[in-house]
Image (tube, rainbow, N blue to C red; front, side, top):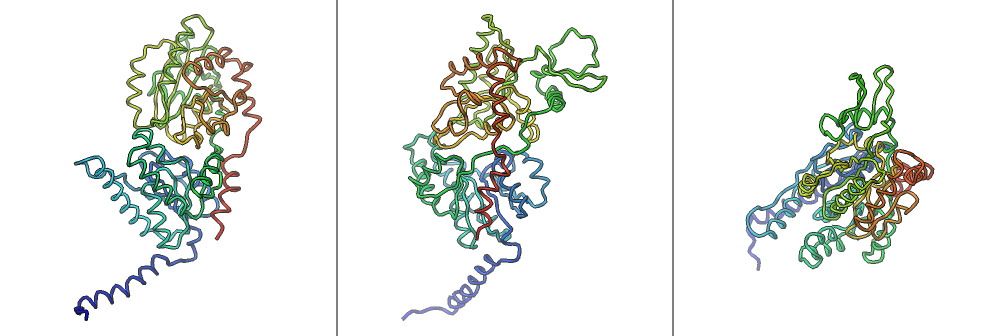
Length: 467
């Protein structure tokens, strides 16, 4: 015979009443529920362009978007201006600092889970959670659990695999990497719908994960385009104040009222802007400064380029701009500062979201060192460059051919020696547009594919609007 006290009976009775009420409150729908979507990225919103594009596309179709993520960098102004997008910032937790590293990692995951649970359970009921992976630990499990509790649908946008990125620094046999792989394999298939960035990833998800995904290639939004000369000059003059590489090195003209940069000149009489005939070539690369991009390859190629110029090759000087933030930036900045280059200048700015497309549209050549940890994703930076009709030299990996067509819109290289020869070849007739570099740019102008909006409407809107 069970001896159950009166207070215990009361507690059970109260719980029996409250739990259904709490469950009803969690799932309480109203007229606007189906038009609310949570966009979740367990990373910096300002450095997550694809998720910002998702948010903007949803808002254009009348959805109220709750955008959850870290607010370390300023998001694009269009996101900030859109009334239908509400940004809910979360903090990146550090975990326990004392003790072994595994304790720090476990505590970080636990605390991040609690924070996400609180945010997702206390916001208005969302019809769907659209989340980025990676990073997916602990985001996928928490988002799935919340969707189960609240009757929402989970959509995962697969940019890559998190465990392959971890393996770059820890090694594939590390226990944390193996746990992360199991985690993604277990929780990934629980999503209602999945998106991915390449057909190669779509096939791999189907074959090895049992996930049926829709390929949503990255496409440039309309802000990525060739930049008019006036806007180029305005950007260059702003950069002059911070980066001496853009300053006018001095010329024979005595008219000090003429506004000059190393690339451009503005006539004070009528405001017309012209590019200098003896200007350097503007080379640009963007990066997150992580292990999947080896910038020593580019730096060695630039050293070789310096040798070509000093050896008498008819080549322009180079201004190399490497944009972005990330953990390895300081490491590479020290290497860059140690270089003694006369004909090549390097700067590593962090640009506002509005300035980055303008700089891409002003450049002469792009370089991409993204080497996919899984071999299944494509570099979004190249997509943006192509939107600006900017030819690219990109390092080779498994599915790169889905984006970069060798000898058509750019060149693919394997090492620094091959890259330096490509720079020499492409810039040998600079600034003339008659050479191979000009041909690639003409090909990009005539083969423009879909922009982001049309691509999203075709591939994602049917998934979001289906019930």
